[in-house]
Image (cartoon, rainbow, N blue to C red; front, side, top):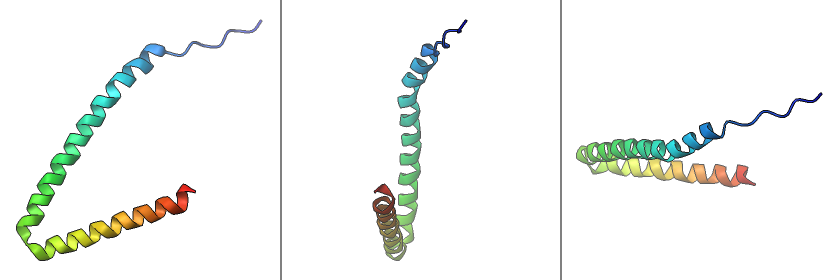
Length: 73
C-alpha cells in the first residue's frame, strides 16, 4: 500500500512570509544608517577623499553592471 505524500507545513511558510518584509526593513534601515554615518565622516575629511571615493564607487558600479551583462545572458 502506498502512503500518501506528506502535507507541507503551511503555517510555517505563512509565518515566514509575514516576517520576511520586516527583516528586510530592519536590514535596510541598518544599511542606511551606516551609509549616512560613513558619508558624513568622508565629507569631513575633505574634497580630495570625496573625489577618490566617488571614483571608486563609480568603478564598482560599472564593474557590477559589466558582470551583470556578461553573466545575465
